[in-house]
Length: 388
Image 1: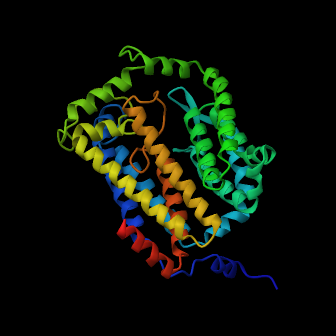
Image 2: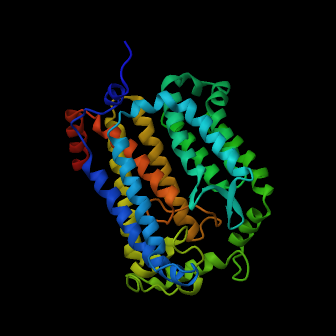
Image 3: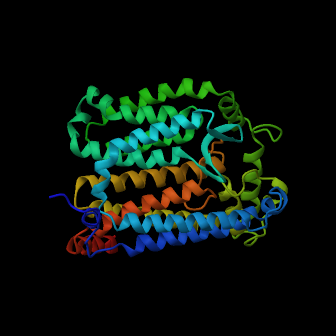
């Protein structure tokens, strides 16, 4: 006898008694801090560069999309995360179609790159969704076919969908494509002791990146701008960001007192370069405090991964750790000129509707895993954390 739809939905709901409220607290804190900094960094741009908009234009959009993200996070956290395994093939196919649409005339461009699909006044960036799809796919495959990591043929079969999705992304967004590859390799890293094959795979992917970098002239220009920053060319944004960091000093000029955000001195101050505004207004101490909170959040995720009831849940949380950790490092490295300039947002903080909604969806997956941790196991892990 077939189950009614309502019965199927109920069977997907989590019945666990444990919940990681500390992770939820840090997620809410980082998101709320992001609202404050987006407002501070965008107030000038909202009034001057956005015709007819109020000074709260970007803040309101970020707030609305964050609320949508929290609703999605809550709904996903109430679901059994195992449900995602049943839809992974469809998700890969759907994501590939979206990425092809981005490269078609239906794609929407900004700053010289086509990365969005525009529906009415809403722009959606499919490459952000690819990160989640790859996390679920790799966790599922490494759970069902661990033998794939024991041979080069198996690794090719394992990475084939990742290479296809990352290749489509790399046409217009190399940094996100590289991040997708790092997420896949990070999940494999914790699943195998044969690191030699993973290093070979990393080398092959690195060689494949060379023609992708040369495909777009501006990527080579950014490399040159990184090596020899020139305020008249590609080094302008980076140098202005460094000026902001340098003038912030130890404790900053005060919230809302950034000078570099005025007059568009730091292009995209409320998006990819928001960390420079944080350093200028809150100083090195404020920036370090933010980094510490990110580290604590990732440590909480490690606790959840270790207590997950199955390998699939544990590997999904590992994927989220790699994503949030590496993307945060990349953003900070770009702003401080340790890496070439590229469009990588700071998780939870940078302005971006697609980014914040899908990041909070990821948090919902992590919280769903935490709901299925056995209370006894959770207490044991909490004792280990407190002793450390």
